[in-house]
Image (cartoon, rainbow, N blue to C red; front, side):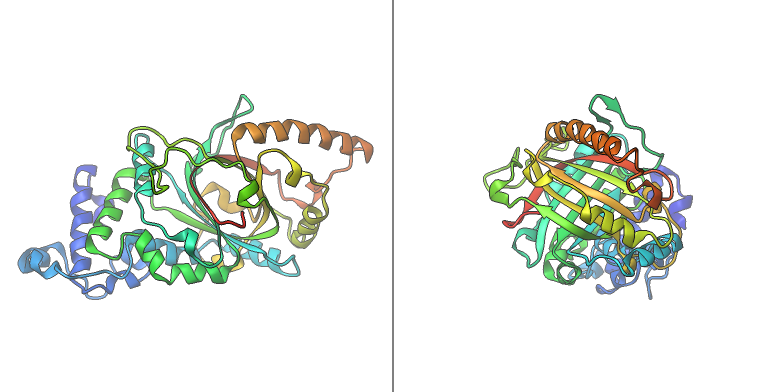
Length: 373
């Protein structure tokens, strides 16, 4: 509450006071949900006044169990809107089995922050590639022009997303509850907590919002056959980010989001399963999955981002934007021929509430498993 009422110049002091207050609790404060943290419901939390009285020595050796970002990811990843819950639960019933589990964390950065934000991600420790069930990771940067046409997005649409692909939810949970998660989110130290909070305050307009999806009917090209090129890496394969320039594109991700009409989810899934596709033989193709919003990700709250209204989406990864645009031109021509052949049939449009909405991303900082997307 104090943070919300404080002028911008004073916000950092409030955040620092929060860090020290948490540190004084011996490491248990970050086990509470972020909603409680924001509401000031940390059990026994000291104020910055009591910190001043006790001194910095009280902080030595304190190791919060999770960083702020980690806490958001673990607790808020299981929150969502009533609409999300209804749509996702309905979609999952009698539908196709999930064969992947995709986790997105969505960010809106301040205007001057993108290079610094990318550097923060590049400097994170990560052992994702060594973990059971891991498939693919990329930090996605929104693209606002495709095929020479400007793309307009609703206000509040994230300009960055992290995307992690797992074989199943069990693999994701194993990472979330293990040491690799803590390592990637500040290392569990007070310094890591401070760094995370400073990053949120300086680089982001608002707190990140997670989105969990089940991946249906996946297609992939093994890494040996993939054309993804890792760029601007050091001798250990880590991205080299200077905080001044954006990192180069390493892949391109196209998503076409949609909302199934009530009761039409299973039928929509079967349409995509049975469709004609030549993706696997198309130059530059890396991976595809038809996404269904995970029902367990939604129970309570209100939609907070424009894309929260969708309960399905395509997700296609390409080696580059040029590969996608080449496929797109050919695909549209073939789709039009098939539509004319069937006398102008509606395809899957009659299964949807409204029209699909596309969003495009440049992928940076790619991490791949040997078996592909």
